[in-house]
Length: 200
Length: 200
Image 1 (tube, each protein chain N blue to C red):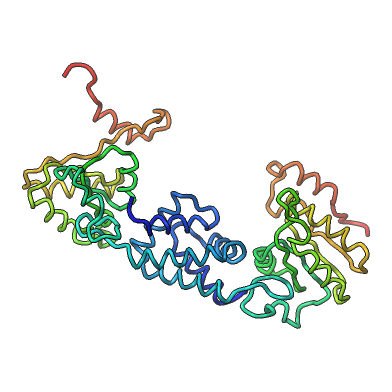
Image 2 (cartoon, each protein chain N blue to C red):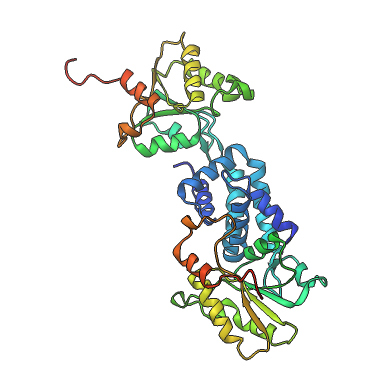
């Protein structure tokens, strides 16, 4: 029904994350009925982005440059390296404004069942970067999921021989979290890693 | 942060319906990290669709032809015309397989407060089509919303002088609907327009 080109558009829109066939059809109709100029701008923006944006050769975040702006920024602490699973995590941490070191972006997390091992995740390149001796502390900021934890655990083992301090971002009750609604595993973590407030 | 082209891509993805800044960023990262080939195919599909898909000159549904396949289909009943608000509604009705007449697609519904009157909705073109004398019944299948009802009401008045049967799709409890959860306005409609099951 309608046209082949319409069906192809719907099918290609489904490549976007969380877009099913109903949403894709709605998007296609919206573009064709109400956003024809915008649609062409979107197509152009996609082509431009794919052509010019690639991974930073140092940290693997996305950039238009050979080495990204964060890696080039001399005001950031070269001795402090935050390891994350994806460029989206760099966004999130930068947005929090609470980190002034450098980043290293893995290609996701270890997932042996899917055939994703240390090589695929880019761990050899990270270890090579660490072995250059400039970095004094690695903050493991992989997700607090089973896979993220496993990846962090693997990295601790892999870095054992290096004279580098290895830390993990804290896990506990999120800001504004009400204990009643926090899952029991998080509560367990929060109790286990409780902070001492008086004495030293 | 990141690059201008990335920000432009995020901004353009927000043209899609129901896509906010967080989703747009996720989509952009997904395309750049996992779907670079697919992204280019999507861009191409958008350009192809905008270039080749336009409104059918008869019914205003979307088509690649001058006159769409439904309008050209000689097996469909030319005397029965279903009036809908958008091409998506044609999809929905075709999908139900319960209509074998022709369609006429309005440009949405009347919305005087937004400056959308009969002209903008394309009612003059519909009236012109009706005045050609081929159509014996018009089924008003605008949405069961306030605006859809108002549009249907306007059309009834506008067609008063024509020797055409005018009907409105039934409103009532949807299939599988439990009375307990049906809104009172729908129940009111369902009771008012109740069907006689015995006698004739």
